[in-house]
Length: 257
Picture 1: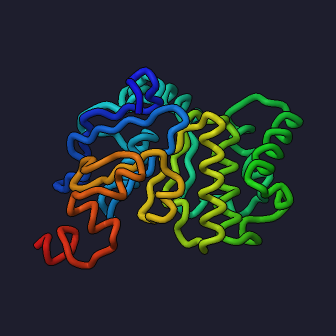
Picture 2: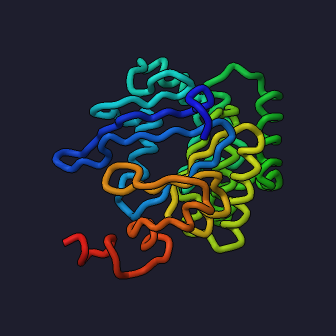
């Protein structure tokens, strides 16, 4: 990506762990405006932990997480809540409230966090549902929708506050190939609307469709990053094994002791 002035998110020398287990160590990464950054890695390598740190749900032991030039780790509770309004989060399981319908799920952040009148809230809800192709589901409960439909509703809800940055935690998890392609296309269209997207995934086909840049998380830090074509040609044995899905190599349990 280009220089620091274009960085929506700038993470430097981040360290975090649970007890004696270090998850991230001297981790640094930047995401630029309108960029689609796919973060790859094996299960349990710290990808979801990274998203929780960006949201300020947990605090790092060291380092900085600068969003719109403010360090998330140093914000007060009130300042952090304000920053979170500029960050959309799409959870792996969509995380919709099961007891209220789609329209009410999308309206909730607007009614809780803003003073917008009901007619404006309704207009925003309709606009976001139209964007994800789900306007006809307004009156339905989450249980009445398929997994792919719930995921698209989750994306719509993440967009109602017009975030600068949207985080995706395994957006293709549990979806069939057609539903996955629809989600991938939606993420691409979001970035074209000036939204920066960070997508945590281990679905390589999806990552190569989405990403303008890819980064692999390994042993607490970014092992390699680059545009998809360069990443596909990587000669790093760890990246190579991950891309090829080879059972033998440095990522195999036998190789790791």
